[in-house]
Every structure is written in C-alpha cells, then in structure tokens.
Length: 283
Figure: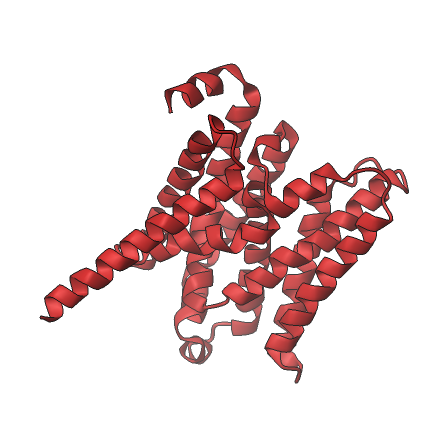
C-alpha cells in the first residue's frame, strides 16, 4: 500500500485512476441501489454489452471517416441511451417478450461493435481496454465527461427520488397515487445507462454488472433504508476501487479484475456470515 501511495504522489495517471474510481462509485452506489431493488440487473447487463456497438462505430468514424471529436466514450453514451429507450418502450408498450428483446439488443449491440472493429484499421487497444477495463488509462478529458454524467445522475435522483423509489417498490401503488410510472421507469433506465458507461471505464464491459450490484448487495445486509443503502454502497465502491488499484499495482495485475475479485470476496464473506448468524438466532 505504501508503494502505491508513493507512486500516486508521483504519477498523474494514478491520481486520475483514483478520481475515476471516486466518480464512478457515486453513480454506482446510487443507481445500483435502484437497479437491485427494482430487479433489473439483466437490463443493465444488456446495456453494458450494447455499448460495444457504439464504441466501435465511434472509433470507425474517427479513424476511417476522420471525425476527430468522435471518441469511443461518446459512442458508448449514445449506444447505452438508445438501448435504454428501446428496452423501456418495448417493455411498456410492445407485445414482444421482454427477455427476448433484451437478449436481442445484447447480441446485436455486441455484433455491431465487432463488425465496426473489423472494418477499422490498426490494433484497437482502446476498445480492448473497454472490454476488460483499464482504469489506469483514464485521461483528464474523460474525467470531465465522467463528472458531467455523475452530476446528471445525482441531479435526477435529488429531484425525483420519491417517484423512483415508488416505482421500484410498488409500481401499481405509484400509479394509483398519480405517479407517471412509464416516464419515471424510462428515466431510471436512462440513469442506469449513464452509470453503465461510467463503470465500463473502470472494470470493462464484461464485469460492469458485478460492480453495479456487489456493493449494493453487501450494503443491503446492514442498511435500514434506501438512503442508507445508497450511502453505504458509495462508500463500499470507493473502498473496492481504491483497494483494488492498490493491490494490483505492485504485482502488475489487471486493476478491473482485482476490483471485482475483492468485491466478490467481501460479498461472499458477508453473505455467509449473515446466513450463519441467522441460523444461530433461529436455534
């Protein structure tokens, strides 16, 4: 740990990585709580894999069509938002099975990304880092974008927390109380899409769902309210990302995978301890 702290004082890229972990943790703890309570982790998983299509398209436009401002992260935002709106509208209004549509978007998004990558010359190291995560490659410009996405998510939650809480716990009761369930469900999906983009930068597309749900799952064993769960989830996410960075630094391990292994280990320990405690109380 001391070696990592000394290196963080010397190298800006490590400070950027720590800042990225903090920014992602805020959105992760807040939106992850809604996702777990509403039980829409499978929708978030579909969004996370669909962003590869947007990233591949953005890189293709940048290198082949010479559109300089078209960064992969911008493509990820566009693809995630499009997936959120399509899934939400189909779930609410179409007669198609929701799981079928989610699976189709998941597969098509990945396939589109692979096709664009195949048509883009050169080795696409950036996209590979997004696939498996590389928090150490976060630049200052990406931190500003992550901060903007974070601010948007926090603003939405502060303005509409009661409505979002209502549709997460009891959709029918919320509708009877005059809450526009469809509109706020779409808003929740859009917030989830933005959070997915933030987490893709940290742990990659493959492992984004773990970081979105594991801190919340751990917090759920200790929190007594939704606000407590959010706050504890944010704190746990900060601890997991920071400790994962520190543990992966000296042995030169992938930071994203280390973060997820750490979070998974803590979750298993807490879950087993909680189950054992409940068993002793039952006796």
